[in-house]
Structure formats: structure tokens, C-alpha cells
Length: 411
Image (tube, rainbow, N blue to C red):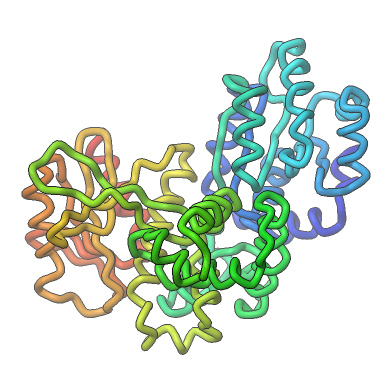
């Protein structure tokens, strides 16, 4: 089963995207040399298959979503693995979790690294199976949709409204799809299929309303009682549904910062979507022209900022160390970013004109948290500015600012 035996769609996608090198690639290749397995998780359609096939063209490829391949792996796991020879890319490994035990035995017998690359889209099943079978034998990476720099390689616009409307899913930009149609299809074909599989959701209409309510609350505290009441379900059901959305890599919760300071800090996380375009679609935005005057433009921009920072971490093989600050008096900072010997405080402002009071909250938070060494405002304009209180950075320059921040802390 050589690379020529891959499905036509996978090969076609790989050929189209070969020039768009994902930022995570060097980390993926390096870790494959250090472990028997590398496991790449992330949202559906974030480009996991294309990434792995482009990084390891010498490996066989098997998609365990295919019924015949899945049945073979389930009924005859030893025979299935024997046909793969020296290793392979196993796509959607969570579909056959029992196979991981056989992979463990195979790795222990082989006694070497660089055997299998595994991908998966559902955190619950995959995390449990890996912790039981491959602990210590696999490196873990998370691939989110395109970063801004990767998105730009496709020729997509850097305009803020277009970014917030069309989002970052590779397929939309690779194939020049209409975002409204593509994101609607994505939600119905992937998200709803996954939640049916792992969540046993009986009232799909209520669940759809719940997801749309989540999209309308990006950047806000994840108040489960309020979400449940508005969706017509209990607090317990709302908690379960939100966990399912997290397991399917649709949403994530940003934890609040905790410190031994006198101020009383909030304990509820904030809610964000892994793709801001999907959030825009779910709140009813049908074209980029609606973004400019939409009441949630600022919240969507904040979502894009937080996601870009999260991608910066994940694409370098790091875990999330992000949090936000908010006390009971309303003092807040959108994002705290920890580095080796200090902390960056980041505020998101969607406006294109710098206001004199943009650093007020950051300065007050910095007085409460002496570990803050860098203050920055990410805004909707195009020019980088250095102010007395910190830097003003366009969204497209955010990743570069993070790199400079990390370099300063390491020197």
C-alpha cells in the first residue's frame, strides 16, 4: 500500500497544498525522530492529513474512516499492521481505539523511533486511549486551521473584515470556496456528525440553538446557567454539550488567571471558537460587508487574536499557557502570555485608529501583576507603533511580536 494507493482526494489536496508549508512541520518532523509515534489532533478539516502526507511522503497512508479499512483493523489488528511494514500514517485513529494496544506492542518489540504518525479529531476517545496504551511512547501535537501567515500564502486577503468572515479552514482558501456555503456544510456534515457519535444528543434543534448562542458569546464568560436557560436546557445539559464541542475542537475555554493577590478574581473561563469564521457564520453573518457594523465585531476580533496566539504556541509544539485577567471590579486584560522570565499583557482592539486610553487597563493590571514585562495592544490598523506604555501591533504582526517577546526573555 504505497503512497500511490491513497485516495484521489487526499493526493489532490496534498498536491495543491505542497507549497503551503505549515508552521508546525519542523516540529512534527523532529518529534517523529525522537518517538515511536507522533499523534496529531485538531479540528476536522484543519489540514492534519495533508500536513502528515506532505511531511512523510515515504509512509503508507490509511484512513480509518473508510469502513473496509476500519473493519480490517478491528477484526485482524495484527494482520492489518503486518501489511504496513515499517510504518504508516493512520488517519482518525480514534475510530479503532483498540488498535493502540497492538501499536504499543509493535513499538516495544521494534525498539526504535519513527514508526507511525497518528491523527485524530475527537479528544475524549483519543486522549483516553492514548493515556492507556501509548503513554511515554508518543509525542502530542495539535494542529489548528491556518495561521494568518499560512492563510496569506493562499492569496487570501489580510483585510480584517474578510479574516473575521472567512476564517482559517484550509479548504475554504485552498479551493476558493464561498465561506457562507462551506461553513454551513462544515457544521452540518462534521460537527453534527461528531456530536451524534460521541454525545448522544437527542434534541438536535436545541443543540443547534445552543451552538449559535455560544457563537454569540465569544469573548465572554462561559456562563452555563445563562447558556442553558437561553437554549431551553438544564445547566447539566449545557455543561455536557459544551464539553462535546470542546472534544470536537469547535470551542475552547480560556482559563482565568489566578494569583495570590488581594483582589478577588473571577473563576469562570471565557469562551472562544477554534475558527472565527465558523463563529461568524453561526451568528448569521453572510458576507464580509456585514462585519464592519456588526455589534460583535470587537468580540470576533478578540477571538481571532486569541486564536493566533494559541496557534503560535501549538505550531511550536508547546502547550497553551494562556489566560485572561478579570477582577470583581471589572478590571481586565484580554490575554496574558507567559514567557520564560516574564509575562506579556495583550489587549485586543478592533478599531483602526489608536485611542489614547487603550493602555489604561493594561497599566492598571500591570500594577497588580508585577510579572508583566511587556504590554501590547493588537488593533485593526495596519502600522506598528511604539508608545511609552507599550507596542501597538496590527493583527498581521502579532506572531512576529510574540517571537520578539520570547527572544527578549531568552537572552
